[in-house]
Length: 491
Image 1 (cartoon, rainbow, N blue to C red):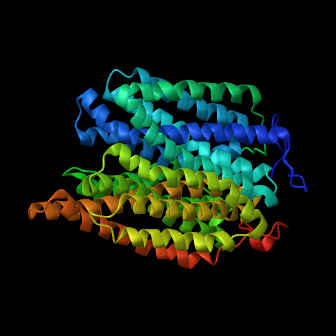
Image 2 (cartoon, rainbow, N blue to C red; image 1 turned 180 degrees about the horizontal axis):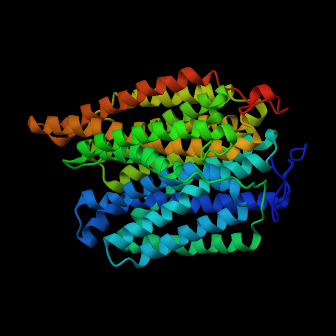
Image 3 (cartoon, rainbow, N blue to C red; image 1 turned 120 degrees about the horizontal axis):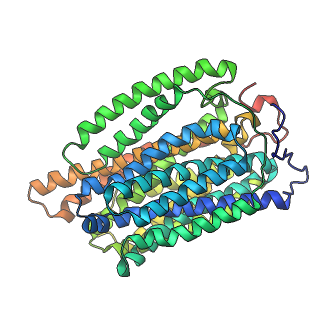
């Protein structure tokens, strides 16, 4: 690793496990910024019907406000491996929060759909940088014996923001219009930006790495094409399937070319996304499990409200309240699970955690139109506990298995595959449910009677996929804190 550039503070974690106050301040700033960014991301789903009505646009066009956001994230995140090596913590934070704040302002004052879509894209560019920056910073400054506790706080952010987002959006939209959502987020984003400008310091090291221009469009077409293609299968519209297939084919070809180019470039340390992270078996298994869990979580959180409203007959607020306790519980358990990981290691949490998630999905595959709501709340809470037990050790064990020089690339891979897994979950579960629902309606069944078997089949598919996570969970172990070469990729 080269010498630290002017303005960066080299960070060597203290053997005692204590984290300097200045480093903790940076981590808290990043946690707050990530929370605001994810909160914003999760408010839009419930707001789209209101936007469609206010702007006079069809649902398939309004869906672009979420599809374009996911697409931009899928394009930006793979480049963060380069960005986090080349630029300082302060530079990246200010750039990310400036983009996010600017995008929020554009969306707030947008006169119509086109400008609003532009605002969402700019927001997503800032959001896509934030999570890899947070995770890479934690890996660089937090001692190995304390990483579980800090990653537990990341889990809190990832869990609580999606829990609060839809509920907040529902409450706001009951009395105000959709612009109020951006009006609430904007001042918080500006305050976070101002705090960062005042207190953010540069942690870790930077080095002058070349930017491979060809890799950027290949990454955009590859990851972006796959995420967009999957989102088309999960959306409603006659042309969705054909568009989805074309996007997936283009994405797969571009991704193959991207991987080939990275393998060539990493021989001279010039790769945009260094794939040597996969030399660590521990990292590879952890990332596979994380992708499966993202598929399960995002797919379930998307399908459950549809099932609760269309099949069980609840309204939007009641559906949100059923999901809320589990999400809040998952967030609050994050730091506790982090402490358990630091003390007891990976398998104590990960093996039972993945089993609980899988068991909850198998239960969901038995639901019907008469399933009692409070039972669903308990099952969702149990699934959230399983996810909390899984995410913290996976974050810590995956990145902890890499050389320090590969942290930024590992974080980029982890976050990119989370996006792909989430998009796949939404697509697979939604398209399965919708196909069986529509087939039943054409046979003359009511929506509730036709939707119940669709929901059961969709959840059964997710449950079967989740068994792979259960099988692999026993092979993920806590990295050796002594930093022995055998535990790391890149040697």
